[in-house]
Image (cartoon, rainbow, N blue to C red; front, side):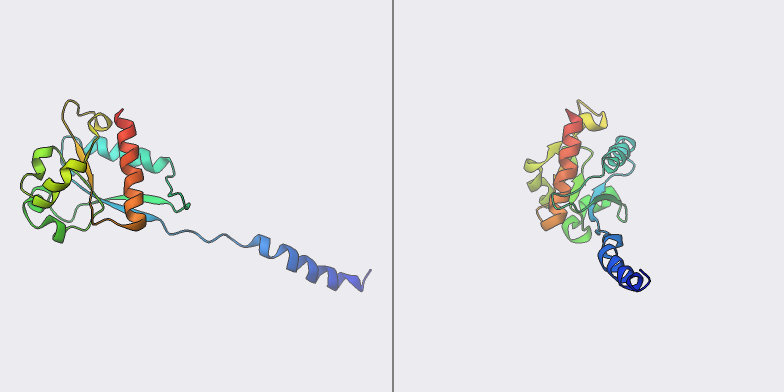
Length: 155
């Protein structure tokens, strides 16, 4: 038995060693959302984002999704300027459809917007959320998962 001990130890290490490895952590896909942090709905949107994150959202591949509000640019200033060149986001939540009026790119995308008014307790107001066409790949897919969640909460 004393001669087999080293052999058993090596065999046990080789068999059990790989099972003890920690799984690789997947880097989350970040959905950058531009919105008015001072809108009448800001508090409710904050709650919806926290509710969404609490569901442990993932892409079909298993990659985690994280939502981040962008606040580097003032809401009204950004909408009047070159929004598509100044702000890099996947989704935009407008206070109302009229907010897109000064921005040709957003006004064109408004036809594809989803209304999340009930999700933010703003009905009968229309609160549009737009996934920008410049979003691609996993970030666009993650933005769609987030918007689908908001729309489901609006029903």
